[in-house]
Image (tube, rainbow, N blue to C red; front, side, top):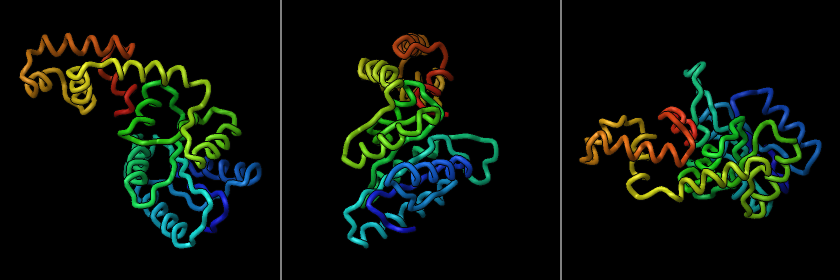
Amino acid sequence: MSITAQNFLIFDDHPMLRDGVKQWLSENSSWQCMGEASDYGEAVRVFEEASARFVGDGSRGSLAAIVDASFKDKGEAGRENTRGFEIIRHIKASVHPCPCIVYSSFDWGGFVEYAMSNEIGADAYVTKNADSSVLITALNEVSHGRKFIQGDIIERFLITRQAVNSLTRTEQVMLDLACGGKDNAAIAGELGRSIRTVENYMGRIYDKFGVKTRAELMQLRGRE
């Protein structure tokens, strides 16, 4: 892994996609790949090694991570999850964090909002169907400490962010419990409310997010 003025790490479980992104960026920008990984554990190791080398070198260049949100870990064949978000959390909690770009096939407003929230901490969001130049723009923006969201998904992001901000404290608590896997009966028991009351609250939450089922809500919020 060499250190240049502009360096990126790419974490995605599809080798051909990683190869394509690396080649395109190296041929069309000054960004060069410093490391890659196909599963969570490997991604953590690669980031730690790259971060240590980057700091130890004393370089004033840039380092950013391109992370796929939907990751298949080793031993979990056929099962997609959002361990990419866990990679971002790890990077952001490290001693020497770097900007993180979510590079995903998902363009739902709620998924984008969740990725960019303080809970996850992504600095940019780009979909895999975007023009390749958008990824360069995202890298350049985050390298200067700015946030970036692909232009054609900003409106959906803002609508969902508005829905999140409109939640009452009780609705937020119930949303968190619901997205944590609890059904209405479990939420009622934990909060000391009747099931009917919880159903009414969940109905209002569904309306604010424009969904009809718990599954749609959890998917929208980036949860399995």
